Length: 350
Image (tube, rainbow, N blue to C red; front, side, top):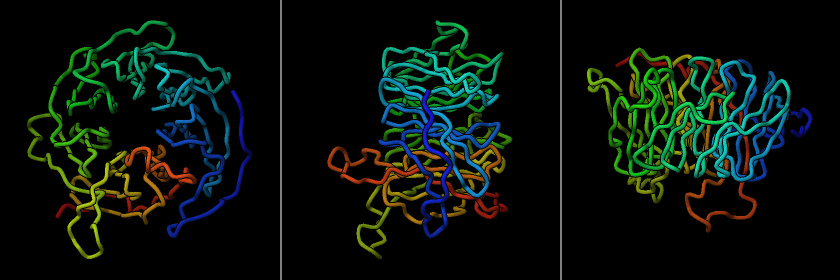
């Protein structure tokens, strides 16, 4: 384990006074996750590293720890107690940092890159890993072999858990829904309601009915409820689009939606896209709550802290324009936004 950086003051601020964190990764940022116990942020990057930062009052950040994969890191999460960080990467391995001892161990193995790692708060805690080898595996961290494995219809692109619900989005627009009390058999299998490749699936928080949001590479999000009795509430909407010329009102420039994060308290959610914008939404009132000023590059990932008072996001190249879009000096930033109540609280239904 290596430590990096000492505490720093705020280095710069955008018009909205969002705070740029010091010591970001040296390559594109793939994933981020706040601890459920304290304001520690784990960040995974294409530079093969996982970095852990402490976020103090006023947005001051301190690098606390760093560990390595043998390939790009594609996903990070924490266990429920906040004392272990889990990560998956292009080295086909799931790795764990024990915060108390500072030791790193390999805890999962697939036959292809691990695209998503999620903590399942069941029994004494289980790590779920979704891979491009078309499986989800469940791991007890004390054992070298998975406790169970599920074959998916295609490669795992995105996965989320809001116990007992787990949703997996794969290539070819398949979505598999699991009730984790029966983790080896899909409760429901469906095609994405969106026409284009799935980019992210994220489960609702603070919701009386279980469901999830799914977003595609074509600037569109669908709100999807699990149970048929709630299906009348399903809908989709366009976002992360631009007019080709000002005032054209054609919205013909279409961008991928890279990440969706649900607010832990209010159940509202964020979308972030390849167009460099972030929006906060209320799914129940079907309204947009906030639009951020456009960033100088795509927004690759985002995360709310445990209280929903801090919203972290990454400005990074997402390869949405292929190799030609990777210009030298492309921004690679970690940003913090202090959430105001009126940005994240639900609106009364019209």
